[in-house]
Amino acid sequence: MSTSVTATQTKWWNGGKSPFNLEYGKVMMWYFLMSDAFTFGAFLISYGTVRFSSNSWPDPNHVFNAFPLAGHANLPLAFVSLMTFILIISSVTMVLAVHAGHNGDKKAVVKWIFWTIIGGLAFLGCQAWEWTHLHEEGAWWGRNPFPNANGTAASTNFSNFFFTITGFHGFHVFSGVIINIIMLIMAQKGVFERKGHYLMIEKAGLYWHFVDLVWVFVFLCFYLI
Amino acid sequence: MEHQQVLIPEVTFQHHTDDADFKRRVKKTTILLSVITLIELAIGLTIYTMHKGEHPNAFLVLAFKGVVCILTLAKAYYIVSVFMHLGDEIRNMIMTIIVPLMLFVWFIAAFLIDGNSYRNLRNDYDPHYKQQTTETKAKPVEEPEHKSGKE
Image (tube, rainbow over all chains, first blue to last red; front, side):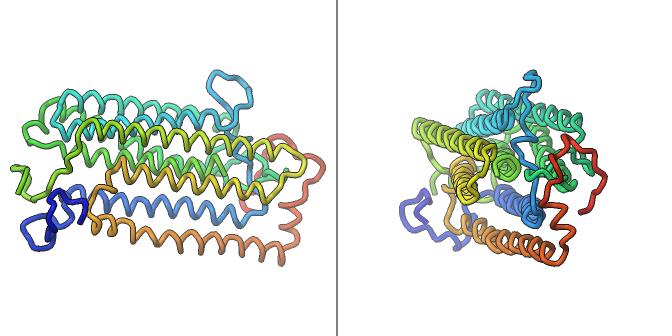
């Protein structure tokens, strides 16, 4: 109970207050995100299981080595690092939006939500480019042109998992951007100001950070190892 | 009770963080996340150059991959605890999130071991499969258009 504001021992379960000191919607958002973590976890673990059951696997550094406008230059990890940093930065702007909401600063909330949306759109643009590029190289669900690292022909498992998992994550980013746009409009129209609190921004923020969190693991599983 | 929000039917207490302290914390976390990402990229490129060499040291590659996994967990910790403010919540709340996630320990271990066992079994009992997936005939054809969806 050391985190509570009141210095004396607060009896959280005595009634009259939320025992978790969180608004209902925020608690439920946390539990939703936990269940979503298991969904993503199941995807990534099934990918790991199949990869562990294969004698060899395509080398990510040979698959993901392109960069827009760089022609055929061999740039492993470059583009995906850009995507990773875009998501980290958009996560930071979201933190700032939530904090502005705490202070009831409508103008700052609108500003930071706007930048978060820009970051989300930039990430989606990058992903669209990467998918297009891989599709042009012949990769898609059920098609995998990339050989295994040991030189043998690879199964389609690699591209199936890649497109399914990054696609599912991209869908989360997309819905996050939509939610953020709705938050932007509501904040701009003064809905939260009239309500007297910006808890909706906090819930949208939790979702957005979760999207960033999942990307950290997708980045690890597909690009780094 | 101090600082109750009138319009919310539930009674919750706001965390009071002053702006300067908050800014410092966010800045520190941002830098930490960026630096960890850069280290991960450096290790990723090291693994890449090792794979290009004649005989990559399998143990060293595995060790580097392990380090990257640990760094990723560190990143996850900072995102959840600082950006999502879970670290500022009440202990009971933190536990209702963290304890169920412990299931992942079993989840990951069991399924990866299962995958590994399946590979060993297939290599032992299906020599044709083993030959197909481990021995390269001549040099790999660049971008072979292959049909076998199943292996």
